[in-house]
Structure formats: structure tokens, C-alpha cells
Image (cartoon, rainbow, N blue to C red):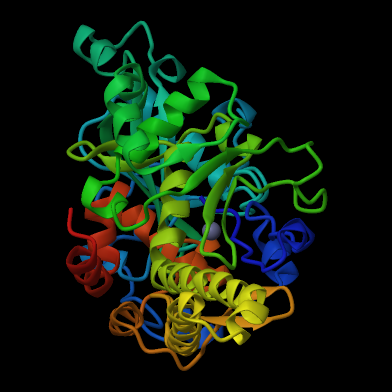
Length: 468
Ligand SMILES: [Zn+2]
């Protein structure tokens, strides 16, 4: 998830100095960011207001029934954001109702006890500061899927079928529609199906590890076997053809208190970093493993949890900047070869200055190799400056920065984004074009159907660039 953005720096020690904004605290995170701000028109220019609610939707007098509402349409989703921020735990919720007047609609047939519980959850979502950690309130045009355990609402009166239906964890999608004329908020809830996350984790094993090991490595910082299993499982959600585009990433497990995380930015979940040589890694922090009820996906695709979304988000960053990574790596290789040849030439200069058949060809060879490599080195450097990441970042060798946001960049992804004229796909995605790319990529992989409705053009572009 989000959480952090990768600080790409020439100087590794400065990586931590440039802390990432706290993704969980969006207002603080956004204002505190050192990233180049994106003009609001980048994300908020289009699709100003959705059509108003269908007639009749806001007619109900009671807060509990809005029978005429049909829930969000596909068009509604085009101005919607998905909740990815925060590790949300139902235990922290308030069991008291807050007396908020809001419309509440559920789809399909649900037992009253379930509806009542879901209404309480909706009440909590709307009640300022009692929602997803650090999210603040539950905004309009916002959707969040939560896994809720059946013990929260099973009652003795329920039928055997109902008890069976809610015997495990069930995922519900909460949608806050646009405010109606009479009511401040309208919440729509849909049951998405039995949560598959636990079962999937139980099936994680040699197969997922094999996929991981084929493309990536971990360093010695991982000690916890179950955390590694979760990492392997998250990676296995991404098709191999996509993983193959970002090979050789090193995954590192970082502790919140190991001195490397910026204490002012304690809510980093993970971070993608790239060095001047093109060497790239993904660091995963404690918070990424915190229990959360947030889910992605649906009954058909299966569900994913917070940790998985975080890892896929970071892979998204690696995919976004992969051309620059390759440019750096190519340039670095040529540069190293040239340096070596040059050093040899210098070393051999006194000898090469001596006339003699023995050294002549050897010295010629070294000298020509050196000058060839040097011109090649310059070529690679020049080409490197022309590269743009999908989200419009360019290489810059200045100060601590490795990359900068080129506002004039033109890429297939950016033009698809323009066509969709959509908001940032998630609240965290508002932070920068790069974060939005990583967020959208994670939704493309894990919450495909919902994503394709939100961003039809970016979806088409992703499907072409990263076929599944
Ligand atoms: Zn990020």
C-alpha cells in the first residue's frame, strides 16, 4: 500500500533522511512530502460532479431503509476512490451509534442482524476519526471492502443456512455515494462473498516460493518464516510475465526501530528504492504485517489483504520506473568497462610508449577499446536523460535526487490517465503521479473488475502493457 514512496537517491545514506510521508495520515503526509507536487488538475480536473442520485434514492425517512436505491452504477465508479489506506481493525470500533442521519441500503437478502451490524460499521465509518486508521472520515464517492467475522452478527434466531453462510469471514463492500439533497450521507453495502484470504494463506508453500525465487531474492534480514510465506504469496498474485519485467529485486525486511526508518515517518509500510547503478530493492516494514480487515478483489477473483496490496504496490513502482532502471544499469556497465580499460591503459602507458612489436598490438587494442567504450558511455548517458518512466519521471543526476517528475512527459500511461479524467484511484494516490500509478497497478492486479470500471482507459493500457 502505500505508503511510501521510494526515495531514489544517489547516496544510499540519504535515503532515510528523505523520509516518506506518512501514508496513513494523508493530510500530514501530503503536506510533508518532498516530492514534486502534482497540480490538482492532474487528478481532479475532470468529471466534476457525478450525476445526482437517482430520483427517489433519498426519499426514505428512516436511516435504515432506502429500498429504492440500486447502489453505485458503473458510471459512479468512474469518480470513485478505493480505500487502501490504513490497517483497519474492527475491534477498535465503537459499538455505540453516533446518531448520524444517513441513508443506508444493502443489496440483496441479508438477515436483519447482519444489516444492523453493517449499519453500525457504516456509522463508524462516517463518524469522524473513528474510521480506518488515519483516514479521518469516510469521504463521498469512496469505496472500501472489509472482512467481517460471522461471530460479529450471528444470532441464535438465524436459520441454519444463514448461520452456515456467515460461519467464517465475509467481505462486504461499503460505498459512500454522493450526498443527497436531504441527507448528508448515503451508504450502500454489498456482500461480496466468503473471505478467501485465510484459506489462500494456508495453501501458500513451495509453489509460491518457487515463483518468488525465480525472479527475486531476499537478504538476511528476514527471520520470520510466516512473514516470508506472506511475501511469497503476495508475489504469486502477479502473473509471471509481469514479474519478468522487473527481475532481480532484493526484498529487505526492515524493523521500525532499526534506526533506518525515519522516526518522523513511522507509518511506512514498504519502500521501493533504486540506486545509481540500477540496483533496486523493496524494503518491507513492520506495519505492513499489521492485521487489517481491508480487502481487495471480489468473489470471482478472490480476495487479497493489506500486505499483498502493499507488495503489489511496490512492484508497481518498480514497473513504472523499469526503463530508467535498465538505462542506469546499461550505462553503469559500459561506464565500468570503460573505467577499467582506461585504468589499464594508464597503467600500461610507460610500456606502450616504448617501441616494440610485442606491446604494440596490445597497447593499440587497449587504447581503441578505451575510446570506443568512452563514446559508448557518452551515448548511454545521453540516452538515459531521454528516458521517462510510465508516470513521467526522468533521470537527473543532481543533489540527492535520482529522478524528478517531468511535467511535460508524454507516455501511453499518462495519456490513458487523461482520457479517464478520473480522480486519483485512492486517497494515497493523490500524493503524486508515481503513487497513483502504484496504487492503480495494485488495483489492476488485485481488484480487477472494480478497477476496470473506475479507469477504463488505464485498464486497457495496463492490459496491453502488462497482460495477465
Ligand atoms: Zn508507493
